[in-house]
Length: 318
Image (cartoon, rainbow, N blue to C red; front, side, top):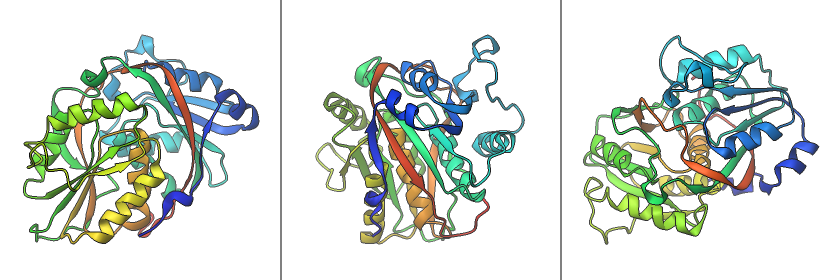
């Protein structure tokens, strides 16, 4: 097991943080949430850029001037590759990424692509919500899942024997997405990771209420949760450490990982994969939707900073 908790994280005050740090590039995904705009406005950088993800369905009148948009090709790989080509970053660039609104496949491939460009160290920010719009009924994705597939750059070298397949789910509010992923890996043993303590105590209860609706698809009853793991929802490094522990202690033929909770959890899944899983029968899978709501929360809670340190255990190119 690898202990990733030695990596640096801190809760910060944005004003003080940006007064002390200037970046070459600060980027964030455009959403209508207060927390994304608060950080973007306060950021101190030579260049600040919104990433306009097509799934948020912003029209041209709503897109700030200078934002990055991409209409050529499809998927997270084309989008992120185009953005990084346009950004002109070097291994010495001081980069800060606000992951608050960055959808999971884009965030994951961004980690992979930055490592391929030998940009191994950068700052990552995440702003917790003040509260979600509809508590446990808040919708975080569209109703229709187009496909469940491997995230580009996180495809494993799988073997034909599926008798011992293991699916590790980062359980978020979207119970429909949990069900779709579980159904796509029918027969796999399921392990769930919940955020506890959550971003707030009430959010943990909301998370459990939503995830419980997927119990049938996960092949378990209400009391069958012996494989659950509780990990701080704001801590990517504890998430990565937990995944390393699960992998080391489990016998599996193929391992499938699916982060469906907070963005720090997604970051933890990506860090773990890049450090330990390349060239192994391990993939990150995700249920892809064409539409995501532009606004899911109001206000801003705690703001976290993570110092990302990437190290690949396999080939550089994604």
